[in-house]
Length: 353
Ligand SMILES: Cc1cc2nc3c(=O)[nH]c(=O)nc-3n(C[C@H](O)[C@H](O)[C@H](O)COP(=O)(O)OP(=O)(O)OC[C@H]3O[C@@H](n4cnc5c(N)ncnc54)[C@H](O)[C@@H]3O)c2cc1C
Image 1 (cartoon, rainbow, N blue to C red):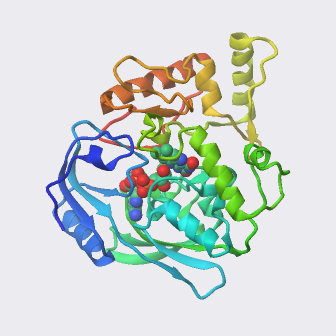
Image 2 (cartoon, rainbow, N blue to C red):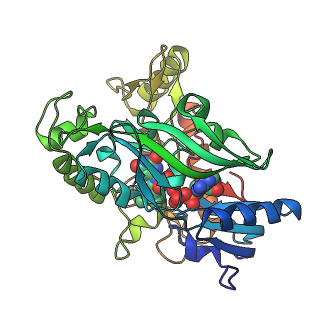
């Protein structure tokens, strides 16, 4: 179905983005594939739109066809704990449903906005879980071959906040459905994140009721403005704007030296072991120490969230250009202070950083 309502600000959680040339809402897989085929045949650029929670769209909009995913369906598979979810299902509703069904493995991903089909794109993760741990396969429409295909987990190239789907600039695959294999258990998977364990009053590795984990995660997220709330301007964001940088030992030593010079001799840069001799450093720590605190603004609307340094928000009057100018200032400030180049987490459409 084609609609005249095509201002992308109405479809992004940042509430930013100009018009699309064409806008199609696909409620069935057939409609979705037909819309993609039609646009591809006409040589029109295509933007697949989920919940718009990881998108920064130019003020000029998108000069092509936006295809909004609105397919529905959740079904149990043949294997125990196997669940297949249509791309258009609301992600948090899926998480809540799996917990109610006594299935564990997604509980820490409660409260993440957007649709199920987008979760493999950047391998969504939070509080010690990533979808790559439970995705069995992803069914896609392959724009190159014009056929549907089932990509097993190993073919998805999952890594920290990325996958083959996100790395592929041509956007070859349209996700139609995602199959997860979850544990049939009322208890959560072992808690693997210190902040969550502290909130639950348990040790790392402990298991508690999945419903309890979900409540704790939602509470932690709300405090950080990470659960969409129409009454909270700090939630008008695309989530974390920058990916936490992953540094090798030499880069880590250089950051530590810069941090001591800037913040005092006793300064210790927080880090998480990322395996293979690599360290993940919280981007929020670098941003704050580079001089950009919560609420920081260039004065034209866009600002850093007052609850979470990593989120850039549009409290109401910002433009995409203003948001990007702020992001550039933050990125350049961190590079100058620590020699670390932050990369954006959201998908940028018609704009560059
Ligand atoms: C308040 C807030 C908190 C957040 N917290 C987290 C978090 O904790 N962890 C985390 O990982 N992310 C987080 N995010 C980011 C975001 O919610 C996720 O990346 C989410 O999976 C995006 O889903 P979406 O449906 O909104 O995708 P969209 O923003 O609509 O699209 C994102 C990208 O995926 C592509 N895409 C979407 N659906 C499909 C499909 N079916 N097939 C092919 N391509 C597709 C789009 O073209 C685009 O390139 C947060 C965002 C917000 C606003």
